[in-house]
Length: 96
Image (cartoon, rainbow, N blue to C red; front, side, top):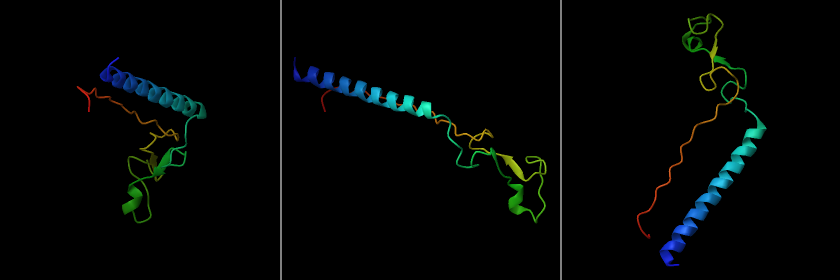
């Protein structure tokens, strides 16, 4: 085997090993369960924007007078949402 074939083989094996490591970490993370949203502390509600400029009274269409609106970070569920990640691998055209 030439040096180019060995380089490509070692690169391919390292990519497979990295993918296996990431998959095992993601599988372990999935077993933990959903995490609590850091913005609303798991309540699903945050202070409404109308409270920022209000002089003590609260109420707008968003909060319907409660002073609390749905958390934009978790969508009101109270649990964190996973962030979709796209991993791209670029093939090299020749030896570096």
